Length: 69
Image (cartoon, rainbow, N blue to C red; front, side, top):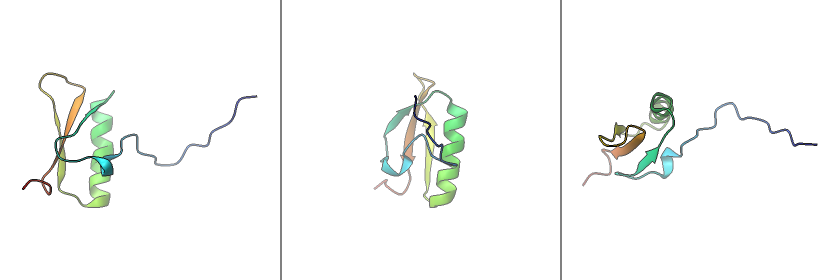
């Protein structure tokens, strides 16, 4: 008999807390990733953004304006 998993109401797919300035993530859906990022940014209050790679449309770069020296 297979196990039944309970889904958490909001479980982020990407761990933005662990990301540093310049890190890249591969995503399946850029719009969904941006929405998750916007929620995370509102919750944490960090000054960060995601930018799309010019060469790979499913790769997003994490830019943290607070980490720039």
